[in-house]
Amino acid sequence: MVLKIEKPENVSRIAVRDDPKVLQINLNALCEKAKEAGAVDAVVIESAQVIFSSAVIENVMSDDRYPSVHWPLKYPKDDIREAILAAKYGIFFRTPTVDPAMPDYGGGPIDDLGHRNIYIRLYNIVSLIESACFYMGYHLALGFATGNCRSVFCSNEKRCWPMLKGRPCIRPNKGRPSMEAAGIDSLSMAKSVNWNFSENEKTPLLTGLVMVT
Image 1: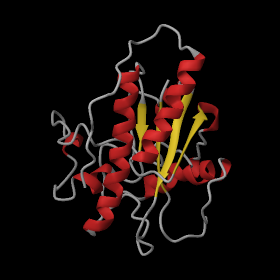
Image 2: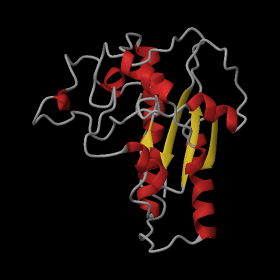
Image 3: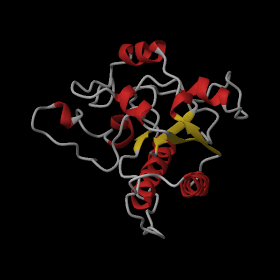
């Protein structure tokens, strides 16, 4: 599944200070863009609403059968939590699983092509929102998806190549960390924004987060 990235409608300069009215208009526009691309819910959140959980991190660390540079997430020179909290606002959204029989793949692999395409749609929306942020002048936008990008985009590769010294990512415009790999509790966040879903559903909660500015 390929989500077409259209040319930006407007390109804005990077502002020294955000105009609150313009920022609110842009944040609302990003929510609508997410919905137009396939999200069933999309809301503006403040960085204080991002919920971190050590239990989520522990679960990712224990699921190491299909490792990648983003799963488990280890950035030796960067603090991902600090980067998230440095932002003021973000777009939190979710996409439908479509198939009620789809399991929670965790870190993967994802053998079912149809299920993999469902994840691809989510990652594409994150990329779409990030791109829109850039052209709006928010050049430090930071996006997260769900799952392990290796299981989504590199299922035919023997390993995640950037884990080898000197080897670049072969999907640099698509691969990215997931919310859970960053220690973010997406289920608790979904409850806090009152999304209509059952936490007892067997299908995974597919969420994306883009910290805008």
